[in-house]
Image 1 (cartoon, rainbow, N blue to C red):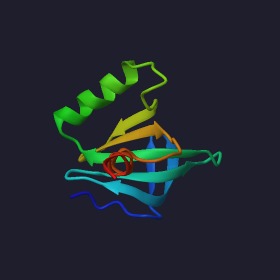
Image 2: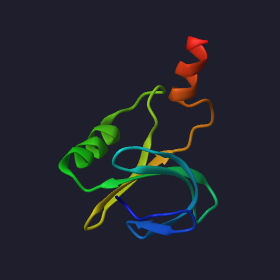
Image 3: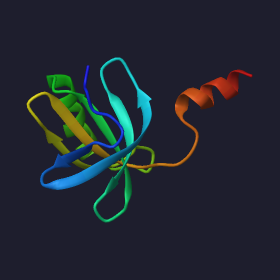
Image 4: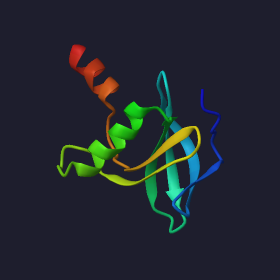
Length: 102
């Protein structure tokens, strides 16, 4: 499991991002609300550096749709893929499904 936590700074291609709060955690990684050095909020997805996640970054980079969160930047360390994603406000999918079932 990855050891990043709130307050850490991750660097992608020389750009620092401070992890502000945990937005979600899955079986292999975590998504954090983060802020870049200019004060813009982004989402940072941190996952182990398996081939599948490298592929995810390439696919996200090629997608251009208003229905898909934009990949703003990406990097990889020895053991972590770092995806810098557009920060979108709203209800998450899990909550939306729960509301639909009520």
